Image (cartoon, rainbow over all chains, first blue to last red):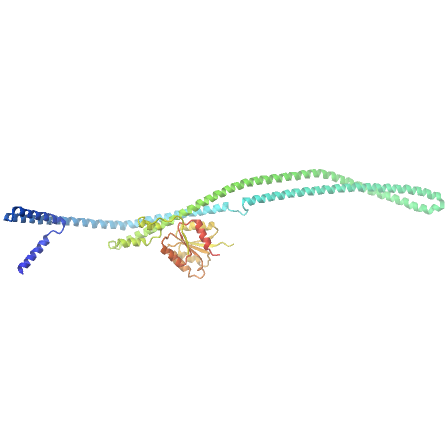
Length: 384
Length: 123
């Protein structure tokens, strides 16, 4: 048992000194191969055995020396690596808050500036609507139509004035004719009174010739003569008044003739003026309508441009969200480093944790290194 | 005819402006809120015909806001459009279950947004 134990102990000792790594095994193997070759060539002689033992011992020594050097080199590399990891960790812990601040600054400034830009666009749109929108007077076409209507009404007014003037002229002429007729009538009455007077003179002569029998007849003839005298007097007065009336009407008529010419000229001038004003206003309105139409077309183009700009401005929001997620992840990393949990962190879990905060398609695409399908163009609206 | 009132809830100033430009240009009266809590405060004593809400916001997110609104008798029937960068179907389902009426992914085209608003807004 003792000898067996010794043999086992010797084997264990030998196994312990056998090099464990490739750095030591190869020199030992070479030396063992050389010892076997020596035995094979020289035979089982004492010098050969001694030489083989020396070779094997040299192999052991070399192997141990190489292993020792390798272990020392490995330890040095590990120390350097740990120091490097600690340095990188410190660097990350210090850099992360800087990056977070930079990202937040970019986000805040981007949001502010794009907000200002959007506000400016909004004011621009309102001004455009205010300037180009219907300002209570209707569209240019409606204004033009109203102008034409006003022109027609003015022309109707001029025509009414013409009719009024024609009616007035007719009345004045009728009055003149009637006045002349009255003068003729007065002349006729005076002639009749003269005739009656002549008849009464003859009757007086005949009554005187009849003597006493004609005396009553003479009284009647005297009455007739007096009546004729009064008729002649009344006829004279009527003729006098008729003359005055005729002269007055003639004067009025002459004055009216002069005024009529002036009125006709005034009405014609007014008519010409109305037509000129209406025609020039219509021409101006047509020019204005053309200009407004061109401006309206430009406004539509500007509105379309603004509409496209509004779509583009929304990318700031997506950008801001992506930056916010990056910032959040950096803060989380900083927190883990600070808590000393960095070494225990599972990379896969960490990446899954990052992905759980994503919202935009771009973030998922970037996370998957571009392996996700591209986003659909245009807006997706889903009604529930 | 009275102006229809719409509340726009988004933490991004630029997005609120962009949505506001589109809606005001179409004749709507727009009220802005910067998150769900702010929006709930502005609902007090007011009546809105529609709400447009972002999903990811600080203080109170959009889905929580929709759930809160659906508990308010005065506002529970006001249609809500979610306007978001969220592309995940799971979040869309959350929005639908919370009570939103539509899901619009940013960036939106103003005409599409106006069509959605015209379709959903209360009379």
